Image (cartoon, rainbow, N blue to C red):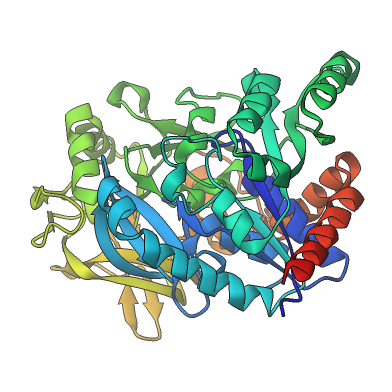
Length: 506
């Protein structure tokens, strides 16, 4: 018999704040002494996380596991969908690539297999933990998809979990979206909803009160909390849906200008997060050559479709502008994973793993050629980084289908226990690595930023902020914030009631 009490958080739409609320509850239950685990049956995301055994899951579930004080496993996210092109995605099952599938094939061919995977994972977690905090996806009211959905109400029924519905008031129309969602649910699923949380509130609560009273009277569902917008929360974003929040405009109040190339299939852009907390760094995301300017640092981030994203760089004029900026010694250029591959001479995809485009030339800034293979590398990595006459211990993680071969005597960037990794130009102004999370290494980030400051004639800044410490503090800050604005006791009471009801049915 299961010993876990589950609760599920669903939203009226994507980016309603489900991941943040689940993270908060993972931390709250952990603080209260319960062995707690996050769960998302099926996650569509290009930001992923590597477990200690080298498996790939959605980044949100890995971060939620950290908030719960546990190591992440693939049982927390047994199915990960990584879009590669329009209407096609790589399906990752228990951390390993299964196959590339179109949406229609996935629905028709994978449904029963997926349900079995999900049921098995839930069973393992429910016998190993005391609390399961489950995250839905999108909306449970997608009437065109609900006959074969595997991530919302079907999972709530499978886990016998009460459901809390989250509405995002920042988008506008929160009462319409909450009421409409409830009305579109099947009666049995509507009964499973124990209440709602209104998220990202800004303004005068007294102006919202009439709406809250109307909603409760109209729907019969309680408002379990109104959570004010929480600024500067240093917790990884779920996926590229949040990229619209960033700007390409330069903030001249900051001394250092960092431009991130935002190509269509950008992945693991959370690599950039540590720069957001640096007081001297302005981080911009650019999609056009005329937005680039002359930044101090250009970052080519990861990509789920390296060739097509590089073709985007060429067609937009960004590729030529990046090369010109390097030739004029205006910018230091740093590529990570797919961005590292783009810095090289050639990229081949002979098996059409990522794209029907089988070949492209790269930027030609590093002497390497990349071949996209049918086997994915997923591993936690560590080594000694050698840059600017310094040796620094670094850790990171690798997720890539490609293998890169260096054709010249260019010096490697990182010495690992298994050999050499990455590459840098002789003047150390072009740097590439497969290490995601490289900027999360505080000592390396300090070295890199001070090198840029020195080039600009600025004094160095030492003892910069510890990003990992900030993230732990963010978990506690988020948990306290949600505790102060959500009826945790009512939710826990309903969790226990649903568990008793399930035992009685058995």
